Structure formats: structure tokens, C-alpha cells
Image (cartoon, rainbow, N blue to C red; front, side, top):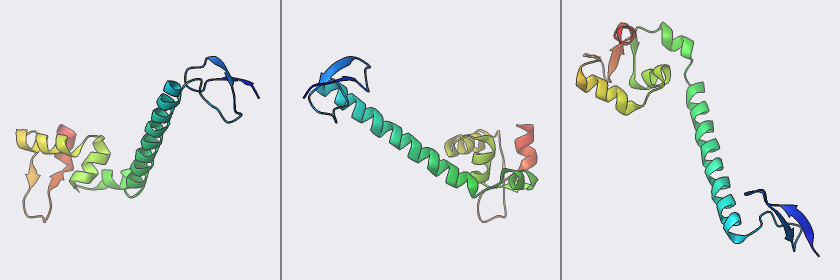
Length: 111
């Protein structure tokens, strides 16, 4: 049985020997598999990000006077490392007297 198909990775026409064949060659099949796995990982990380953001309401965060590192990450869309770098450089100052690091919202607005 020979079936005319189009490769799902490179888009070239080829003659398949089976009806389940998706790619024209072994190289295309390997590259297509890697692309599919990469896309699955990206979708999984996007879903994890959505779950993290759903736990925090942006409007509620904006109403607070003192923010945690995680809230600043979500509000400014920057990494934890960047926030700690700003604290070390002196661009942000942390408040004493709290169990965890808290930063005033006024300091973020001036930044």
C-alpha cells in the first residue's frame, strides 16, 4: 500500500508505506518528536504560571502597602533574582521587623 502524504515537519510530499506515517524520513521524525516535546513543556510551564497567578489577584496586590517577593514578581513580571539584585544594589530597600522580606509599594512606584 502506498499513500501520498505531506511531511508534518518539513512540508515535503512523500509516498508513505503505512497510513500512520507522519514524516518523510527518520531525521524529520526525530526533529518532529523533539519539537512536539518542547511544545508540551512550554504548554505545561504556561499552565503552571496560570495556576500561580490565579492564587494572587493583581488588584488585591496593588491595594497593599507592603509586598512580598512573590507579589512583586507577579506585579512587575520580573524574576526573583532581579528583585534580590535590586535589594543588593540599593535600588530597593527592605523593611525590618517582618518575618519575611517586605518592600514598601511606594519604593516600587519610585523605581
